[in-house]
Image (cartoon, rainbow, N blue to C red; front, side):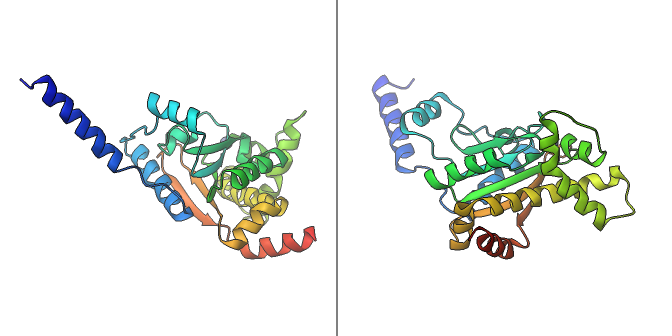
Length: 240
Ligand SMILES: [Zn+2]
């Protein structure tokens, strides 16, 4: 049996070891992407760790503020809870969820807030397989009220994939439209945010696309927009 004093010493030593090896802060886009990739791999493999979800983390983030390492714009679909599928916890991600992961004025403002005030190095726009919002626009469902405004943000992506794949059925077009809709959201963000454009150009911010597969649980990482430099240049001129 371990004497109480010895037990106290062991506990103190364990606490000291814990203090001596703090978690490495995630300060660069590369580190942030790596963290999200490994988190999703854990979740997809059924080995989620549910990090930063305990009482200590809750109290720490409440007392010392939030320091998320990335922003994620995802769809509101109930099968795509961002922190769960990327295996992150309290204070890790600044998440914006909206049907069809569109980026309009409010979403742009939210991203500008986290980029400018919290200094995050990475924004991920994450669409998902079998997205109902994208499918509805492809099928031309007649929506009314505020839904029609939402549809307007997805429409350009749908029209582009229709032009690029004229022979395909609506069903076959869905995966292309989901990916194109991610690129279109990034285009909207770059076009409407001086702050985001400036940071991309300065190399202090990366904006990347991703598509989550609700069947396999795996994220397909798309990387930066292929026309990012041209988008930044043309938007810069347009706003002058
Ligand atoms: Zn969706």
